[in-house]
Image 1 (spheres, rainbow, N blue to C red):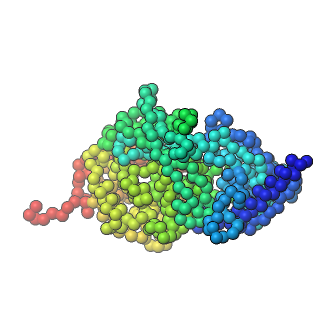
Image 2: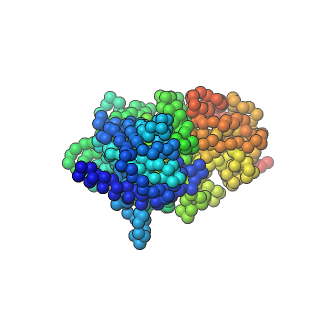
Image 3: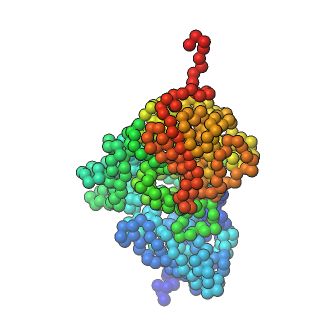
Amino acid sequence: MIKILVRMRELRLIFFGILLVLGTFQVASSHGGHPLSRIAIRKATYALNDNAYVKASPAVVGLKGQNSEWVTVEYSSPNPSVDDWIAVFSPSNFSASTCSAENPSVNPPLLCSAPIKYQYANYSSPQYKGTGKGSLKLMLINQRSDFSVALFSGGLVKPKLVAVSNKIAFTNPNAPVYPRLAQGKTWNEMTVTWTSGYGINEAEAFVQWGRKGGDRTHSPAGTLTFDRGSMCGAPARTVGWRDPGYIHTSFLKELWPNAMYTYKVGHRLFNSTYIWSSEYQFKASPYPGQNSLQRVVIFGDMGKDEADGSNEYNDFQYASLNTTRQLIQDLKNIDIVFHIGDICYANGYISQWDQFTAQIEPIASTVPYMIASGNHERDWPGTGSFYGNKDSGGECGVLAETMFYVPAENRAKFWYSTDYGMFRFCVADTEHDWREGTEQYKFIEHCLASVDRQKQPWLIFLAHRVLGYSSGIFYAVDGSFAEPMGRESLQKLWQKYKVDIAIYGHVHNYERTCPIYQNICTNKEKNYYKGTLNGTIHVVAGGGGAGLAEFTPLQTTWSLYRDYDYGFVKLTAFDHSNLLFEYKKSSDGKVYDSFRISRDYRDILACTVGSCPSTTLAS
């Protein structure tokens, strides 16, 4: 009886601390809104009921080395309601006693972490309202700390904390997890980035790798992290904050083109113990200009979703799992992926980056996963972003720049070029100024101008916001059909250097234009282009998973295909003369729009309007 009373006293102290935390929950300002921001935690009250309980099993997960596992949660309340909900917290002791104040001069309540995810109590137990008992299964991933599950009544608007479960923990919460590949700054370099709980004072991080079936070598990894002070505002700096652990990047150099390599990431603890990940494999990139089959997938605005149905009343990114599944199923036919902005929509809830890297691990651990910066990664007032909104939730680019590697000269300026065989990709950062005369404009021109089109005929421009053409309704209302000043600054570069295709995200749908220059279609063909294009084909591929965007009812002459659905595009270069473009839906992976380009090198050299120097009678 004494032990029971002590346990109840401990629970009451934890619950009281929780309420101090919940009372400071803040809402992120962003389009669509993060599901966690819907909880009016600031209005939470303490309602511990001795007859209510939450039990989670197993209490120890990852016994076989896995980094994700299903947990069964059983719960009961003597006063059940359809508004009751279940929340997952990590660390498990999320009371105010574990938190530090945002401002030392301010008395409690103190700031701590928001729940990682939530479900309604009757989501998987429809009888809960009548019986007061329910159960559900939650997918937990290794996130460097333990977990607990809490039961709330009162809905999301007036939550009342009723009960908290036992702790759930992975056998090694610090284990290296979720490797993601990216191309390095040279064609024969691959980078491996992963997350762990081991800092430089605890272990040495490295990659063990080599040709498949051959000898292995070790390459050291650099280690980065950041603290709450690196965030620019709430919720990333307040209730959305969660320790990101350590992010390691290793550079695998002097790879043989198209060769298969195996690797695993590891840590050598200072007691000489080794901690290993699973083993993975990848195919090295082709030499620039190499004539071989090359397949590229491109999309934007995917986000993340929960396999267990958590946050089920948020329908903002529910298609992201479909996109992820389609890519995994077809991975043997994909060589490299470009996710062009709005990566996971964490919007300042730091835990969601772990959730995202876990979701894409089967893809990113096998093929290079290249990203671009979007408004939900970078934008925050007064931080140098081109747009002064709060779409990043206070992250101001830090998470994207640290969690993923890109071959940029300065990752705070997220523009870069990368070669993949017969492709040259020029990746712009639309959250920084791209207009003529800026540093980024000079980069874009150099990227386009420096490619040898005889060796790399397929020149692709990528960016998050639409700098070319879109029939998205919010662009049409502005009358610009794109970001204002986008085309005005860049279309002469696209035309001069004969960019084949420009692909964007940001608008959550799919659209393809004719080859176009200065609002005029330069080619009457729609599906099979022979010879010179005379303009650039612009594509919006923002249907990766986030809530769809409406089209304007206006019919423009340049819009050839529109689809109000989720999907991604795939480019297949068969050789230097033949390219296939396909748009596939995330729901079934089938092709719904396509075109081909067939041409010779002389067609690229041919003069078009705005692409050749002026001549005189003397010349």
